[in-house]
Each structure stands twice: as structure tokens, then as C-alpha cells.
Length: 147
Image (cartoon, rainbow, N blue to C red; front, side, top):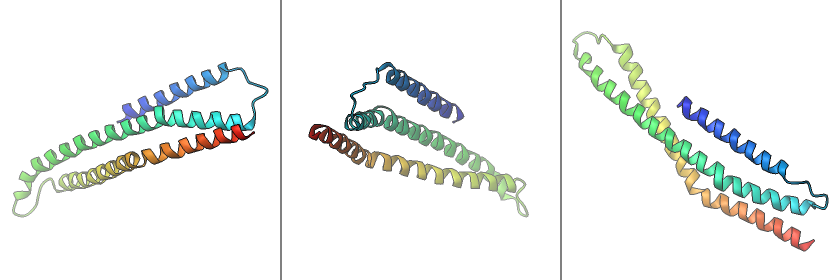
């Protein structure tokens, strides 16, 4: 999981560096109005969200969900293996370990449910967020045309 976080951070910095390179490559226009800057900012926000933020977030959540499912299966197998030691009459020799596995399994199930809900919300409101950004872009275009 740490490997995927490291990759995500490196991708983010690489894309940021690319954006900065492109931004500094453009000569600054002296006649650029605040309205044209607003328009350009709205276009960039929309492009970055569509091409970078949303796909990265969705991919990250999918990876975390798959990793959590695998972790849950492992804990369930471990729980099943330990269950044979709970049949002693007076005490279970691995009681502490069995309880740790049980709590870890519960925590993993809760984390999995949270990740699935977060991904669902991301996908459910993706269209609304795109619409909002497109409306901001249209508003910036209208301001530029009015002036």
C-alpha cells in the first residue's frame, strides 16, 4: 500500500512539474484582462479535474478496495485456522491472538465499507462536479464576451 501511495505522489509531482513547465513556456501577455485570466483558470481547472484528479482518485480507491478485500480474506483464513484451538475445555491457548485477528477483521470490514462508499460518492457526483466546472467556464466566457 505504501508503494502505491509513493507512486501516486510521484505522478502528482510529475504532472505538476509538467504544468509549471507549460505555464512558464507561455510568454506573459501584457494585454491579458482579468476576465481572460478567469476564463483560462476555469479551462485549466476543468482539464486538470477531468484528466488527472478524477482518474487518479478513482484508481487509488479501486486499488485500496482490492487490497482491503485481500487483507480481509487473509484475516478470515487466519480466523478459521485459529478456530481449531478454541475447543479446549478450560481456556483457549491463543485467545489474545484470536481476539486480535477478530478485531483486525472487523476494522478491515469497516474500512472496506468506507472505501466503497467513498468511491460510490465520487462516481455519483462526478457528473455534477463536471457540470459545475463547465458552468464556471461558461460564466468566464460570458464575462469575457461582455467586455
